[in-house]
Image (cartoon, rainbow, N blue to C red; front, side, top):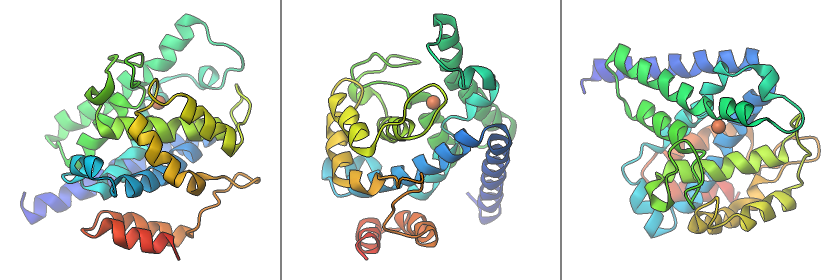
Length: 250
Ligand SMILES: [Fe+2]
């Protein structure tokens, strides 16, 4: 890719992210906060997974910085689902649940349309497509939309499934009670091997304390917001683990 084309692709990615993030922000405060937090949690999980050789070899070709940016789009298809349904209290009917599940298909359509209209199939859009398509698949094959099983599910989707569920559990939603950190961690453990990749659950447990929320809903992160921006940039670099980990151990 020429330098000009690469710059245009980067600009396009930034426009896509910021436009969709604006749409989400105006549409739904809850969802806006969720996508930001899941991105942070994903960074912790990737950082820990980098230390495990069987996982690291699956990530060596990733541009991790772009992967983290693209994670902001994992639920973009929810813009096609009515707010009333997304916030409905109580149990969903089968039809309503099917409608909520269709956010995956709508998200795929958004990214496919961008790819076909721009002729751009960048690493950013490719990661976004994978995350959108597979973050609701389950390790035992009972997830959606394709019922993928085990390592048929791309690593990005298996990682996103854990951080997505953890954050949903500890967050306030109109239709559910809030889980404490320990209960949410236990829920992840109890679903290891059924919903979640058991190896990734082990990795999650290494960093789960970094995921903890404070009582006022803020993240009890050991790094500040500014440091996290640096962390996201560093994690895309060559010495990702050593630099990021030394930052976290400050
Ligand atoms: Fe989702």
